[in-house]
Image (cartoon, rainbow, N blue to C red):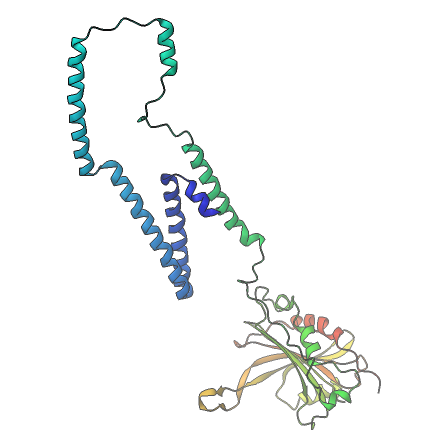
Length: 356
C-alpha cells in the first residue's frame, strides 16, 4: 500500500521525502549500532544510507538534465529551427502573391473561435500537483505520528527487561524432614512471598528489577537432614535479600544468647508483629569456582557484612525462627526499618508453628 502511494507522488515530491526519511533512519540506526556494538543494526544502517545516496544521485542527475539539455538534443533543435524558418519564408512569399481573402461574417468567426481547440503540442497544465504534494505530506505526517505514538501506546515487553520469577518446584520431592514437620512452608512459597513487585521500593531502590529469584527446600546443616530449612533469595543490582525458616526447637531468646558467643555484632532485641525478634550483624562467606581448572573452588573468604532480622515462628516462641537477611557487594546496608517492612509482608505468609 505504501509503495503504491509513493508511485502516485510526483518525482520532485517523492524523492526529497525518501531522502529525508532514509537519512534520518540511517543515521539513527548507525548511532544505535555503534552504541550497542550491534553488527546487524550497523548493516541495516548502511543499507538505509546507501539507499539515500542513490536517491540523492538520481535527484542531482534530474536537476542537471533540466538545467543543461544534452548536446544531441540541442543540435537536433537547431536543425529543426532552420527547416522551420525556411518553410516560413516560402509561405510568406506565396501569401504575398495571393490576394487576401474577404473577411468572414461575425457569425462564422464566432463559430471558428468556438471550434478551435488547443494545439496538439501545447502541454496541459497539471492542476493536481499541489494536491499531490499536500497528500504526500499528509501521508508521511500520519506515518511519523504513528511511529511516535506506537511506543507509548503499544506494550514494550520486548525491549523492557522483565524481573526474574521464581522457578516452579511442583515436581520436586520434599525431604523427609518436611513430612515430619507440621505445616512447613516450602522454598517456592517463600520465594513467591519475597519476590514482591514492591520489594525494590522497600529497599530504597525503586528503579531496579530482580536479577534472580530462587527458592530451595533445604535442611539445616549439622542436623542429619532432620530439620527442615526452606530458603528463598532475590538479587538486585544493589542488594540481595535472603529469607529462611528453620523448624528446630531453639527459641529466639536462646538464639540471642548464643549470638554472644559467635561473630554477631550490633545485637538488639525487639518485637515484630507480636513475636520476639532480634537484630544482628555478621559477615557472609564467599568463595570462587574456577571452571577452567575443572570446577575447583578457591579458599573461603570473608564476604560483605549482612544485617539479619530473626523472628520467632509463633508469638509464644515455642521454637523455630525465620531469618531475613540483607547485604550488598559494596558493603552498604539499608536501615533496620527496611527489614521490618519486609518482615511485615513476608511473615504473614508463613503459618505459625502449631502447639506440639
